[in-house]
Image 1: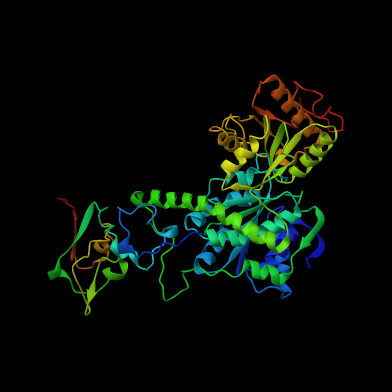
Image 2 (image 1 turned 90 degrees about the vertical axis):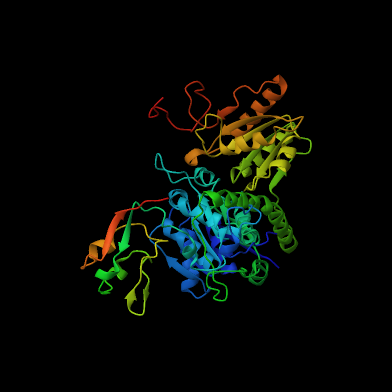
Length: 106
Length: 409
């Protein structure tokens, strides 16, 4: 009989063998996309200009991902781990508080 | 005591489903499997079962319902045929790679091109590499027995299972059947108790994650192992079934093989016709035999090869074309299985019965005759053959008992 292999995301990495990978590729927890860096597809990157920002929060719901953290009613600088560089936030900002520049990678 | 009844193969499958009482059925009608969900929705309407029937708008959705239900922790079943199975294609692979034990009744029908509603195996043979266990039946009794076992095999091996029968031939043909008492089936099938499932709130679960290159191949290798490991599961379930009913179901059935010179290897209802040909030739002291393959996935490579090695020449019968220029799917796998064995027989392929073309006892006589020629001349000739097709080179070979003036030859 087949034995079920169960693991959480942190226990699964690129050295795992086929014998150790979870049955049916299941992951024994939710919300695991938080752990995966999908911010490396960008060509252009939004840049937050704090002094121009009025914290109107329009950019926050327009972000198709989770790249604009908010704390105590104020938006913080970008969390770029999941930002695809779509530029929607740049378009919707009424105050020119977001710049959009070619990303230089080192 | 078992119950003697008479039923079509479709009703027999629906009856098995009723006795098992799955949690969810997602199904969409398509000839010739339509009757299965039809009978089953009658059972639901009449309060005979407590199954959630999801009436979907397509087979793609039917399989999606089964996938979702199974991942959520429910026992899910469906039924389909031909283009319906083809429309499930994408999900077949997802269900198998997610290791979800869905059980599906497949009523085999030709795939369209040209459009045709009759029986051959092109639909399920096309899905042979999707990662599903495939079990085929000769008779109504077998498809009933197979479905009850199929649910258990699926859940014990965590693989989806197709229970196949021949469209119209067994699906609509009514014959005697021995049904098992409801409570015995309930006990045999038990209920689906997965260790982990989406609706188990104490244990959050992600199903069907993105399998990027560093992971995809490990998942596939594990699936291949699951298919290998399902061999002893299928055997054990058949043993338990024999204890309950006295009926024996192996990976294949050997018919008159022990002293045979030549033999057929065949899948499905045509095995019944082949047995009649074997019986009549045996009465003339011709040592002919037959192997009826029940389990095509996993392919019982080693035992089947050993059984074929009992004879000098085998005709491997395919009710599906592969357009491979090297024979049908059963031929390629069965012949391949002989490669490492010494004393192997000659193995030739016959494509037969496409789109519901009849195969007769006389056709099997001709095939056995061909096998004896191969055996005595030590020459297999052309190994990729057709039987039952009109061919201008052999004008008398196929007689349909009607004027041929309308035929385009």
